[in-house]
Image (cartoon, rainbow, N blue to C red; front, side, top):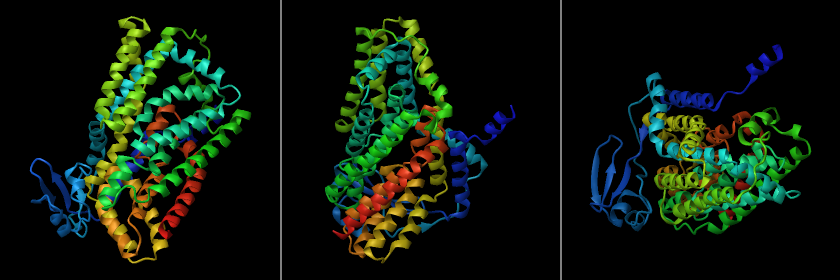
Length: 504
């Protein structure tokens, strides 16, 4: 009893506690970091005018022309604004002003998670609908029958699961920013990896790191590579070759790292970082004690419909401009069809759908609390100040040192501003001109931004990682133990790639 009590005391805090600690830390920063803002430029398509919002909140309108941009020092082609490539407010260089401090107190800290839940209601609804479908598929036995069939097919070459999943997800990340969408895959793939003899961390690594590496070395991803290049005043094709080479090599490094860990625990399950959670996770995702049902035509049809939903989602996100409202509608439609095909009757289908959704309430709360950190920083007016201080560090440096320091600066900025498009439009108009002063092409800044923010995404509590871990019931400390060596390797690799790009 004593031993159990001691073990309980030493257990790592939950995702909520970790996020709340970060939330309090962000609030403390609003007392110590000076408040300040850059003036922001936004194109109003209805009036064909630029609207400039000054740090004091006053607004002014200017003609929507290239001349206006040149006068304001925003070195971006006006067409990027008029065609909608840049739709968010862009920071104007040289306009930073320190403002009266707006410290965030206890009341603001308590209100922020509630505001975070409202702000992320679209993602939360998506998660609930996914949970409902999973509940129906689990109850029907479709997953159990499918996993049993898959385990027979991959027997003896289970490592191919890691290779295929990681490379495919990485491809999705680099092309259209596949990230939040992977949330739907964990309940499906965790049991597949467990059947193959691996643990849940292997599945998390294949999915989460595939997505992270893909977005870190984005090639044509509109939410990072394209929008950052546009905001920097260059074409996204600048630096594309280097990022493409980096993508392949970084994904290969990641696959090798995951496979080495996976094969080690396959030979010795006790070597798993989450061996003490093995029974709990198996009970949650893989009904080992349940008799494996026959893989009937009905069950196959349900899984095919579910798989086709993902294909349609990828098409919609990558080519039709879909986001969470459209994706959630798609999965709700798919869920209704799956319920009808299941043959379990309306009452039973709805009951299983609601049960499946309820199991992801914890995940939904994690999403809301993560957003609360950004709300505290935005309301405290310190995000722009951190960017302003960063620009003062790198002015007039040696080109090679400058590129590495930019990588480190974007690591810091990526921790505080996890949104790739948000960081791009805020930082690029400010940071890109600094490359001109040290004789570097601006695509080096774009790469430094991607590598820095992408690297921090491996561990940033305000990003997707705690949401992911909550879905699989793996604690943050276990993930850190697994990922930190790989983070060091990928970080060193990114620095080398950046130096090569800077010196070419």
